[in-house]
Length: 564
Image (tube, rainbow, N blue to C red; front, top):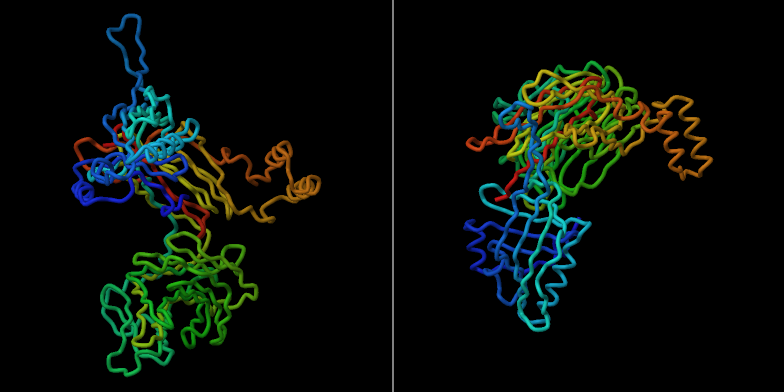
């Protein structure tokens, strides 16, 4: 990724005149980015000439054509048929021609600008040509230099250089940002959305306070909040509330505990505020003395085991982006086949994984759950932890759930979704919005990640696995063959042996990924109606044999014929 501070821009800076046009939005913005992203040419709009500083080198667009790709009809005609029957139409590449004028304050500046322009355009590598309007947002296409300019280049004599630039967009269409959604298991054996008013959260929670500071946790009818006690003179010492759900326990040792934040945690010195999730809490005794606690706050996350009030840190790590309003934090304690495996997710993305080898807090008496807050000790006043909008918990068992993927096509072309499947589990997708036909994919093993593509012009399945299957998931013969090949080649497996490994099921264990796909896709997400707002489409999906790791991430790329 290119460092934005290191990008060279032509022209640089912005003038009051350019700022007016940029904010007014009457003139679209046009940019060309070099093939490696290192140069940004501002060619139309408030950041471009003639509204820029005249002493800055610039590329001025005088005319533009070819933004809409040509197309051809696929037709058939019977021997006695009047006219023809149109079967389909196929778009050719988009050929964009820009009549430009390269401007420099002097001949040296012009020579540098022309060199940068020519170097930024490549034949085999694609740059990016983009347009921005207030109505449609940003649309772009990867383009390559298609034809040599017919202009005479007389840099030694001129301070401006005409230049006819011809690009080709191989994909024919202009694209915008991907539309995305995800589907994962819902863990709601017990839920609290704090839609009541109560001090100390009411009768549904056991709350234990520790620390020298003051304050308490309460429900305000919408959120669980922290309140510093105005009658307590000590408001700088820090205070912690550990909350255990009353009369609840999971059926098994494997649990999933989640919460959704309603605000930011407050920063202070020397101690910040942070929030907890508690799993495998002892159902009797003092809340917080026994169990698995996840801390997340400004700067770090930490997973700990508590035994009779003593903390044993399992793992911690830094956190670059602090917790945000709307974040969903998940603590998974134990997985089928591995009860000592713990994972932490932020918005369904794994941020921490660890194994606690001692097996502490496992058994029928450690199946409670809860959450907590810590008001940070500070010099002037305690730091307030984030509010909690929702808390829920359930068993982390292999199961099946169904739901919907929601995607909106803002383009004028059909949109073909891509489904990234995170194992374990067997995944089913409807053949488009409103369809009763389903396509099945799987089963995937734990740690496997594969993408299913609905566009028949693309490879239907791509193996994206970054974590190899565990040895227990291979047969004895497969492991022996794998050991032999690695020994014989010192780990440098040549292509032929790599094919042999695949044939014997080592990459992946289930065989070729295509063999996991049953059925085909034929119904894309329809384009936006020209006279109506874009409509959100609902695609039924399901996962069976999954755990907290199982998830579907859907993405679709909107396409348009014309970017403005």
